[in-house]
Length: 90
Image 1 (cartoon, helix red, strand yellow):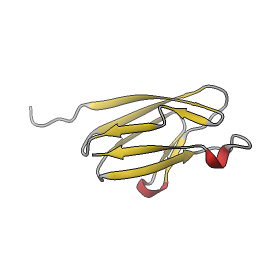
Image 2 (cartoon, helix red, strand yellow):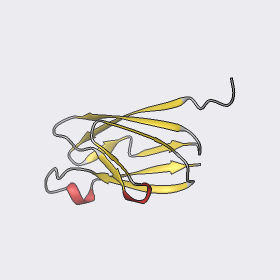
Image 3 (cartoon, helix red, strand yellow):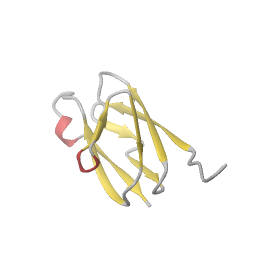
Image 4 (cartoon, one colour):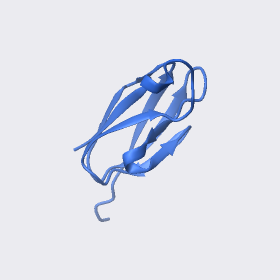
């Protein structure tokens, strides 16, 4: 063994026009796997600052500390532009 990072699995529920949870906190270096539970239509997430996007399963390694806003990846109606959440990397 070495320092093998465990995968932090997050189940993210998305529905018009909110995410639950709306804030996800991980540690720098974590391997993160976000599993989308799209309740009504396909929402997905997009984190422009980190170049991460996906609709069903989003996997990445949290390499940069800070707070990053994610947005809905797919147009989902009138509240689409305000549908967002926050990824906190410590």
